[in-house]
Amino acid sequence: MMEKSYRIAVLGAKKTGKTCLINRLLKKRFPEKYDPTIETLFRYDIRTCEDKFTKLEILDTAGDFEFPDMLRKAIRSCHAFVLVFDLSNPQRTLGEVETLRQLIHEEKCTESLPIIVIGNKSDLVSKQDNVDNKILDAIVSIDWGCTYITVSAKCDENINDVYAAVCKELQIKINQSSNVKSEDSLSKTVKTKKMSIRRRFSIKSF
Image (cartoon, rainbow, N blue to C red; front, side, top):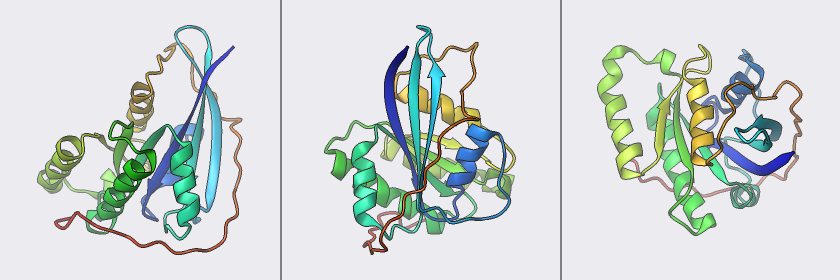
């Protein structure tokens, strides 16, 4: 019996590993070749503690933000958001996350939203960069009030933590004895017109 349906948008600058993160979670594999995403929708079901199924739809979005109308429409249709940046290059990618976070609040017209911020490519960051990561943690957790997780899609580190965090934010009680049905998930590529978007940045130090 299907209980509820939720849509989660995965957003971030290009080449931050959004598609790799989704593939690692759903298909347990890491694509070695970079292939720019236009827009892809993955669907799968989760068995809950009440022995029912909750449908999750993961929207993998383009990272160049050249389709503002599509981006705003996607935000309005989603219930939760996973914002991804590159830990090895936060100067380029964290500002995009801040811009997206502000846009999400504008489009959803509320401050109370399930937003999870992911620092990907932790395998490329040395232990000497732990101080910087603590600063990033403080920005995301304290200043923004969002859940913050560092992962490596390539090395399959902390990927399950992202899944658990999404379920927690959406108040989905997972049946621990069952796995996510993802191998047969439906993927659909959406074609769009090329458009432009103006970016704003409020993060200066990264």
